[in-house]
Amino acid sequence: MSLPDYEERRVSALRRFGLLDSPPEEVFDGITLALANVCAVPIALITLVDSDRQWFKSAYGMDFKETPRDSSICGFAIQSTDRMTVIEDASQDVRFASHPLVTQEPYVRFYAGKPILNVDGYPLGVICVIDTKPRKLETYQLVAFEALAVSVTGIFAERYRMQQVAIDRDNVETVLRQRVDRYQQLCDERDTALHGVLDWLDEAVAVVNANGLIIGSNKSWINLVSPDGGEPAAKDLASISVFAEKSLEIAAGCQEILSGKIDRFELTIPRTATLFKVLLTPYSNPPAGAIVQLSVAEPH
Image (cartoon, rainbow, N blue to C red; front, side, top):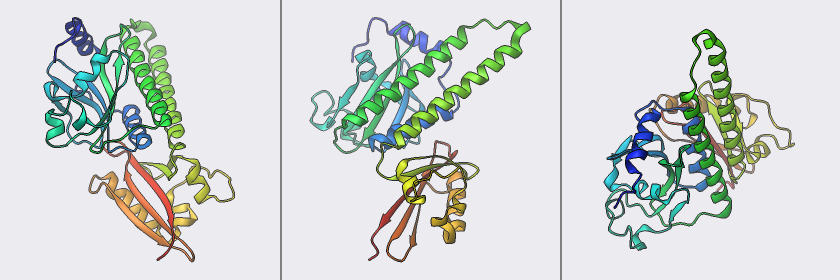
């Protein structure tokens, strides 16, 4: 794969940025979580493409932190400037049919990625989703994908601006306060985006933080746990009447997910005419909470 003429400048800009090999951050992990859920795929990534590797700033559904660039699809996707690359079935695409990620583990079939540009227009990396099955994205999924990609680009731009600001040592307290306020604003924007994306889902979904408090839920969740239509205030799972007699088991499942012992917890709660099914999975990597999915099924 040939490299663009600006490759040296692009890599230089990426390394000056200071995000390579940096610790995980909730603001990015929340975005990949939302992207994987809205696109209904097992893997979502925020990838930074270095000269010889691709490094994952956030990886939902993937355990390792980097892979060689010469065997990456993101290395191809960054060359599409600001357009989204969508590969519905890589095994049928002449560009990728013989690619090692397609012919060997993990047998990639579907890929969609959007370049993340810096303020000078250089693509630093890609926000992408991957599936092992061929698929198409629906219009609402593409809209949400674009919105989350814009969020990542905006956060990158803000990080760059903050790097360029000369800090007056006599005014350091004011500068630090502004940064904290801006970071909180970014977190609020992330939460707003997450709540908006959750409402696209038909399933009843809530996000529980490390303290067991519900920090976000969608309309389907509210309809199931609060049939009268009133939105419940932030509370722990144990205080929801649906979970009453199983609250200790659910709390224990949350703790096992937070400790990293398990990555999936399922429970069925019988009722007179229905069964409530509860599924818990990790929120972010490492786990900073849990995603709770609630569904109703007819008893056998």
